[in-house]
Image (cartoon, rainbow, N blue to C red; front, side):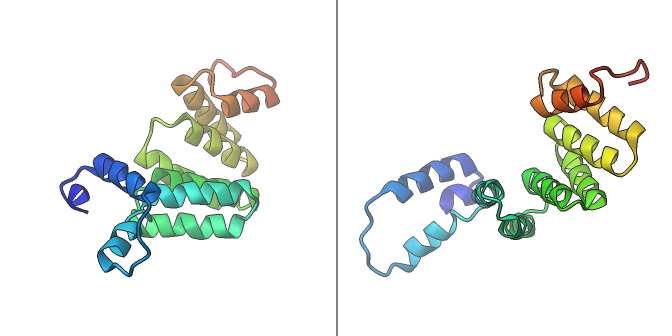
Length: 161
């Protein structure tokens, strides 16, 4: 907890990882319980949400993403996951909004622009979608999802895009 308070989240994470593997006695220890509660940070929640998403448990994944955002509204991956979940539920306007928020937080994520491309295409905003696809490919010319989208569109962006 001290490492976190001092701003050393990485060191705190290392120490927590060591504690998870430690063979701790099974005594009631409020301080130890408080330390283990720190494991429920946003990145741990996002990893769990990703697993629930992969397992097809979309409701649990969405709850976890919302919990991560409750803890830290600037969690880019939580917004991206919500975008994916909204897209899977064919709520593409909501998907676009979630992904746009993720891009505001981290504008260097090619995966976010690829997801936004899909949301825009599904909501009839093809021109905007093509601009997002172009941005994704500028950031990462080998991005798999962006390349799949490009192939599905005939494999060529126009000179305008």
